[in-house]
Length: 200
Image (cartoon, rainbow, N blue to C red; front, side, top):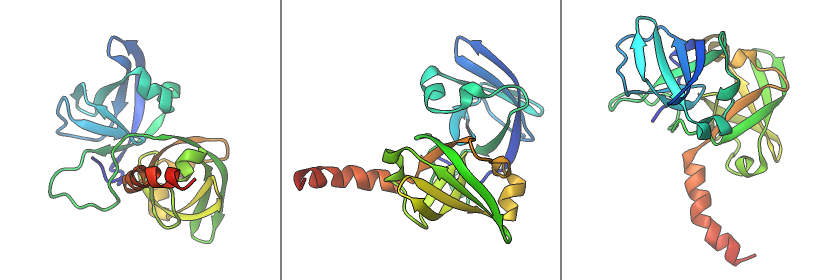
């Protein structure tokens, strides 16, 4: 479990295919890592395999690569990092599972005053889980939905701190991002689905 509060930006140093899947070596400032612990890379929950001073490795199986952009990562790719939540930690963002639902595509990005507004087109079934002023995780970052300019477009307003401490300042039209909808919306949708089907 995560909160969507990014604590480091890592850099992919090496990518190789191995028996565990697509193996990534990541340069990071993290210390005190343990083999087997969970770390979210751009919102994708992965397991630390090996680690050393200033680096760690993870591996992603084919199912993870199919629903994320991880397969396109190469040396030099910058990724948002977050270590798993510990009991007693502050929940500064919202509950994020590290289970990417799908990817969205940036359709607009502009600066208005002191905010950076980014519009992202989502798959229709994912957009149904999003509400204005609700929570959403984009590339692992906990954000508030600022607006929904269209039924399948979500807009977020990025503050200066977020732009400096995550990779979201690099978003431009055409860029694909990992999206995880708020888990509360998923459960509500699941619970009401039989009732909605009965009245159709």
